[in-house]
Image (cartoon, rainbow, N blue to C red):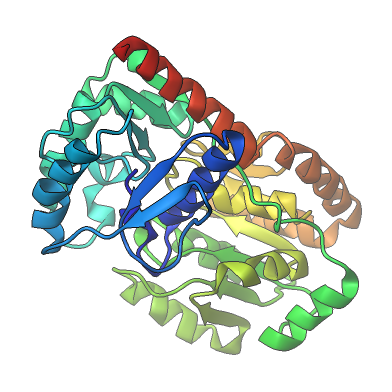
Length: 358
C-alpha cells in the first residue's frame, strides 16, 4: 500500500489514507498490509507493517520501491493517493482518484505542472486494474480527463471519523476558551488557496448587516496575497487560527454558528461532512461533488454568487429554527457516510481485481 500521503502536515489525501487503511484492516482482520511511506504517524495495528522507502524520494519511490514490492509478492497493490510507481509492480493494482482539479484549473496551483501531474497520475489512471473514485463527480471527471473506461471506475464515498460528533456544552466552552472564540462566529476550514474561494466568502461576509467574526482554521497555502490584504483590512473581525490539529476540529465545528465552504471545486468534500456530523449548519458551494455530500442537509449556493452567499449566511444567522432544522438534517445525513462503509466498498473493488487475476 502507498503511504506517502501520510507525510506531515496531513492533507486531505493523508486523512483518507489513514482512515481507509485502518478501516480496511478492521473490516478484514485476517488480511495483512505492508504500508510504504513515512515512519512516523499514520495507521498502526498488528496486521499493518510499516516500511520506509530508501533513497531519494523520486528514485526510491519509482525504482527501488517497485523492486521491493515484486520481492514481497503481495496479492495486490493499493494506491490510496492515486499513484502507481513508474517501475513494474507485477501484481494487480487499484488506485483511488480524489479529484482532477489541477488538470481542469491549473491556474489555482503554484508553479508549473510537475512530473507527477504530467506523467505519473495519467499513467496510473490508465494502468490500474480498477479505480476507486470518491464521488460520482470525480468518476466522471477521471473518465473525461484520462479516457478511462467507466467499467474500471467504482464510486466509493469517503467516510467521517467517529470523533466528529456533537459535544457536551462544557467541552464546547473549553474550546472557546482555548481559542478565545466568541459565542457566535462563522467558521471556514481549509488551507488558504485559490480553489477554496475565500474571496467569495469574504465579500459576502462584508455585506452582512449583522456581522459576527469570521474564523479561519487553516494555514496559508499559495497565491493568497489579495486574501491577506482583505483580511488585514477587516481588522480583528477575521481571525486566522493557522493550521489546526485534527483532534481540535470537532470542537471548532461544535462551537461555530455555521460552517461556510464556498470552494470552486472538491473531489469529495470532507470538511462539510465533518461539520454535518457535529451538528453544525452548513452553507456550501453547489459546484462539483459538494451536492453529493451535503444533499438537502445544508444550504447550497453558486460559488460565484456573492449576493446568494450573503443571503444564505444571513438566513442562518437570523433564523434559529432553520439552524435547528439543518442541524437535525445534518446529523441524519452524516450517518450515510462511514469509513467502515468505505472499507466495504473498497474491499469489493479489491476482491473483484483479485478474482480477475486468479
